[in-house]
Length: 172
Image 1 (cartoon, rainbow, N blue to C red):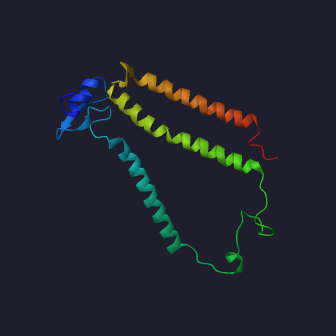
Image 2: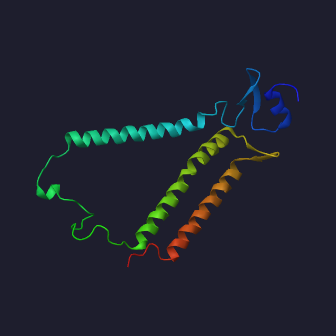
Image 3: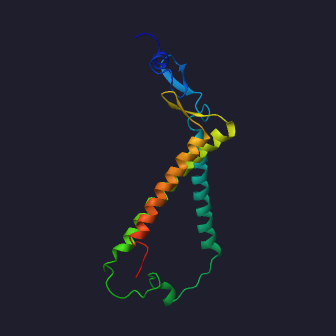
């Protein structure tokens, strides 16, 4: 096997997402990616949202502490337990429904995280009118990506209906 690493990668996998470009004779750098040449670019918007949330949360906490009401007294200093008087043992058993609802919330909340990268790819494909190479010669156009999301939502809806029919949301 002769040639640089970039040439070997190009020879072994000509249908890759991008063409390998030779840098320093050994380190391949991916170019011509579906979202552009910078592999960090899709994550910049996510980092911007995380930064904005952290900044906004800090500003709200500082403002609430500085300009909020400062009442003191025995009632204000008492422990607050969701509107219930804090009487009895703190290690009492909770109904399992609380945990099931919490797990369902986490499940559906985490599933929503998968919508963000899909929306970025879909927006780029729809805006540019191109298709996304999947490998093996297959491509994904905007109708394929839309149907993919419809299938994802149907799976989420089936899970939601299943939980509903099992009575997870009933508190009686």
